[in-house]
Length: 337
Ligand code: EPU
Image 1 (cartoon, rainbow, N blue to C red):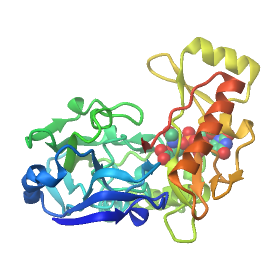
Image 2: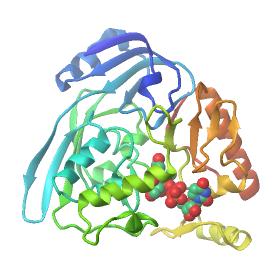
Image 3: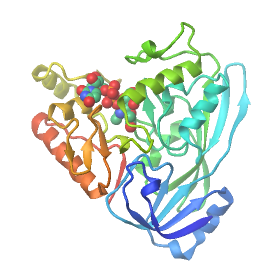
């Protein structure tokens, strides 16, 4: 376990916000967790468990302990005629893990290609894209209770997955996820309905690897990557708002072009990107904080924006969507005080 005091976090968050943490702990071995919990230096300090830093906004320096989870290891645990159980340690790169599975010809994760972050962060916000979410393929999550040191295995129901939400997101700092096991179906049932995916596939017999390549192409056309020449970002900055059916109908009567999807519970999910674009924010810039020109849901750091500046922009966007449409936008990343 490496401990760094007054650690710069710019390279540890994909917004590239230049905040510092009072302590940074790099956790490479699960055996070090008891020592981490017992260390008197850290008692009484706020804690943040960090994966790839792709879903967090530091508005200021962090006055506590950031635990960067760097646990490694991937493997096939078990298989039967219909499924494979594949386990990955929390610190593995999500995209590299997806590519490893599709590289073996194993279907299940291809639509979740190129999502930034780590395996351990994936259940926290129940990552999802192009018609699949983590909850569809998650078998179990292994985690340590940071309050007691107890090791727990959560089955899928216990994770309380919902749209970009889970038990782990609801209880910040409590659970240190150490590994995730996935149940991957052996039968390949490609999900190609999202606009552009089918078109991006070359050849008529799609394999998991080819679908993964197509998803990468569709994503790259709309969302910033992690390369140095791309602006810093945390993917979608807002969730798509869920509103009661009556409110969605009233809005659609006034704005027939508003994209809306009816949910199993009767509510409607509205396109936050559309609402933001209609308010004139797409491609706008306030200093180095801006809204991505190719996708209105993505806030970007063009250079040296601070977390406070990015948050001020987010608040201005929320206020204009609230005023024009009467809809409240909720941030998707964890926004630290
Ligand atoms: N749209 C606009 N303006 C824009 C962009 C999109 O009006 O600038 C409209 C599109 O025309 C479309 C609708 O908004 O009708 C939805 O756009 P898109 O398909 O790009 O998806 P999204 O709802 O904006 C969600 C996820 C993404 C995920 C995509 C694809 C959330 C918060 N975001 O975005 O996830 O990749 O669907 O499945 O649910 C992330 O969470 O970080 C993320 C990138």
